[in-house]
Amino acid sequence: MIKTVMVTGSSGTVGTALVQELMAKKYDVIPLDIRHSYWDPRIERKTVFHDLRRPLDNLKLRKKPDLIVHLASNARVHDLVVDPQKALDNYVMTHNVLEFARMKGIKRFVFASSREVYGESRLHEKRREESTHVTKIKSPYTASKFASEALIHAYDECYGIKPVIVRLSNVYGRFDVSERAVPLFIYYAVRNRDISIFGREKKLDFTYTDDAIDGLVLIVRKFDRVAPNTLNLTAGKAARIIDVARLIIDRVASKSRILLGKKRTGEISTFVADISRARRLLGYRPKVSLEVGIERNIEWYLEAIKTRKVYEAQRRDLMRRGWA
Picture (cartoon, rainbow, N blue to C red):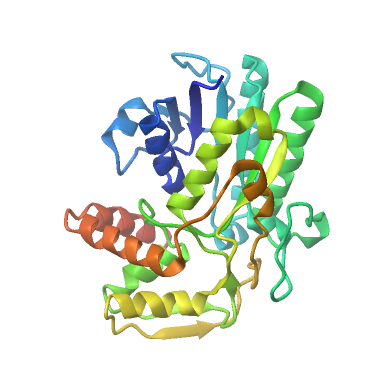
């Protein structure tokens, strides 16, 4: 029975929401991150701070986790094209967490992979979990996720650490202050700044935070019934990124213009997932449409910015990357 869950990357967008939901459902959660939590003082007080690029040999926990959810990652495709060392860091972090699990006898492992492992898709094609191949890898980020999946399968075969690999796609919603498409578009739109889009016809599967978290919690609840497995946890629908930008501009009555550029190296143009396996095994049912999700995201942003918390956090993140 799973009672104690360690979540790496617990201060990130998905990590924060997942820790909150697991705590609400009375799981004993051990958050682990290199960063402080912007959003929830309860998570901040519980967080074990560690740089996962270093081994976890001397990590001191108050109890042994029954399951590890490994979310921590350098997660922006273009950033890892610019600095591929971050891709190696992703692989090293996965290795170090798996080694910790092996040494401590932790046999349940959830890994947040990415839709990037599918490579480029054909128009209207829904990608099933088995439709991946190493020759389709488009970027160092993708390679880091594909290699991590391979290592996880090896640790299952050799050491009996049972995995559930989750492939996420464009998760958006509260707690995100990065330059991912939706939060960046909102940041620029409320300030009437121009929005750049790299690829007119880029069409991707956008997943609202609550739907992704519902899927992850179902995995925690049903882990022993569904592991080992790989599951798509997405909306199962695609939207053009230019339409997402237009929707945000319309919702905030912005004067922002959309500037179109060429697709950037390493990025894919088309993706939508087949989520039938997650429906069948988990009872996963994404509920939040893109229109409703964007509306909720904007409402959260505008409310949070009143305290300047979002503004300051996002400003720091953008300045660090040279976007502001």
